[in-house]
Image: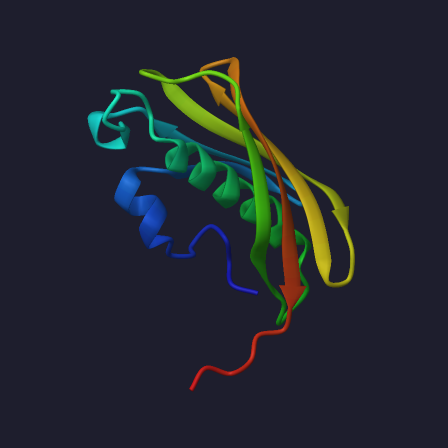
Length: 132
């Protein structure tokens, strides 16, 4: 398993997302709200919250993997509770259940300390095929 502290994550780097905390079964990712994250209504685009939750859930699951395993998102359901126009967003994710081939996770997305969205996700756990 690659070291999660040195893994390259081009998408996260592009939008300024950072891994703040990570332990087995839990992780926190964060991003500062900037103009480039806004939608045409001048609020943070929902895809930013989704991406933050997805990345945090993957980071929470990653330390539970054994050598050779990888994980990939199967599905995510997200409930948007409040819109965001400024501040610092963080996603606090945790593994609810880790089976042999599927894991269930949840993430709370906060703007500073206020809950703005909640997500649940299913992730596949598998051995990758060789890339051709």
